[in-house]
Amino acid sequence: MRRTVPALLTVVLAVLGGLSVLLRRLASRPPSVADREALPPGSTSVTTEDGVRLHVEVEEADSDLTVVLVHGFTARLGEFELQRDALRRAGVRAVLYDHRGHGRSAWGPPRAATTAQLGRDLAVVLDEVVPPGPVVLLGHSMGGMTVMALARQRPELFGPRVAGVLLLATSAGELVHTGVVGSGVRVLRRLRLLGAYLWWLRLLSPVLERFRRRGTVAGRAFTRRYLFGRDDADDPALVTEVQRMLEETPLTVSAAFWATFVSHDELASLQALRGVPVTVVCGTHDRLTPLAHSRRIAAVLPDAELVVVPGAGHSVNVTRYQVVDDALLGLVERVRARAAA
Image 1 (tube, rainbow, N blue to C red):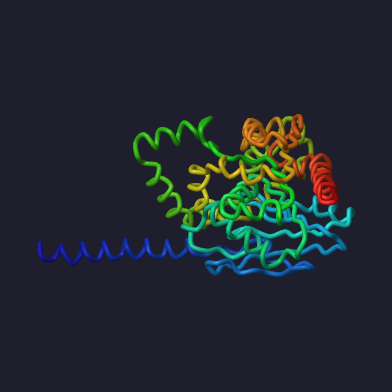
Image 2: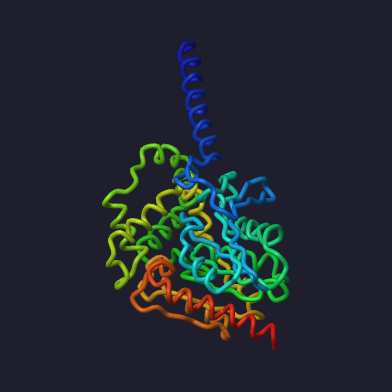
């Protein structure tokens, strides 16, 4: 018996040591493809309140107005290249940045992987990078949730500073209430295992990341089904391009964010947007943030312009970029006309 106690203690210490290594891995973001590329012109960075460095790019223009583009989950600012081109042609200043853990931005503690923290990160970008003058915010998917979080945290910005908002393929809440995922979440909640499941997912993510394969046929099929719609996946190269971008973000980052989607509820935050022009855009075949979520947002904001894109999916800014570009530039003109009036 005396011999088994030290042996058991050794095993326990070894297990705890292994868990410690995994937790340290959670605090770091493995290098992404973007890290190996040269920094583009107009690159800068800001440091958030908790010390995370965010990569920012500024597309300068002789403009009275700035558009800030906030990308979606596991993507990076590169998803807005087509909108960036449209703003450049229109002579409108653009500011783009990578969320923490995405693209070229650094990663922080996993507990900070929340849309609330992303809202505070956006506030830092607005305060430190965006010059004086009216601002239009474009948020895609998780980027739209980030804008809503900012509206809850700093409603005084909407009107005097933020003069317009475009919510693109996003949701104000109840993201996982339907479908297979919703059923699974309900079962885990009923068994009181949801928190444990999400904790273990975070804990195992460094191991899963180590053995992860990118660019697979299965990954391409997933991208085709959930990021594209009925009528916008005719180009296999475009599907592969979106797949490659989304797979750049490590599982250590994406696993940490899952909990915030389960609890996401920013419907009340939309009240802060009532005083500014708002455009809501969504495809009819969006499987990640279905059209019903955009209609719900538009119902809270009766003066908002709702643009429904037939046959389009979640990556509507890539596949139906002309519709999104027109909606964005139209919103910019509404903001300018309102300021002039």
